[in-house]
Length: 161
Image (cartoon, rainbow, N blue to C red; front, top):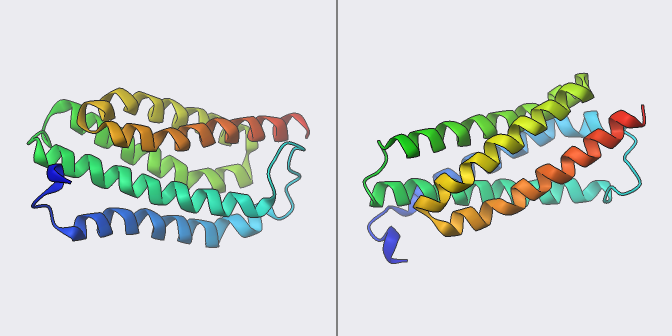
């Protein structure tokens, strides 16, 4: 792609691999013990679906991060206020995403509010992303959609307690 000409291949590897490793560590250390005894709502997909979906979402998050950084470098807008705000929102949302499972294990209501914060942060990133790379904006929509679904699941689990 012309826009990324001259950018080293390792930026793709670095920004895709880090989220995948973060997901793997988070999933391996938290998810198996937290979710094995959770009663899922009737509309929930099979348990195996969650690991597959999150792996794909984390890969997509890495691709989006890579495209946004490369686009900002290409446009020489890395130090612009819009990119700095986007980076803060992106990193904050990513950290909240990693924190969700341990929060859910301790307090389902708090995890619902964390999902709401993740959704608000993610949605507020879309206009900023669109200024840099429209493909990234499109690639981020499945993550936001899954957050909405996670909120429904989370709320239903709270209601059924």
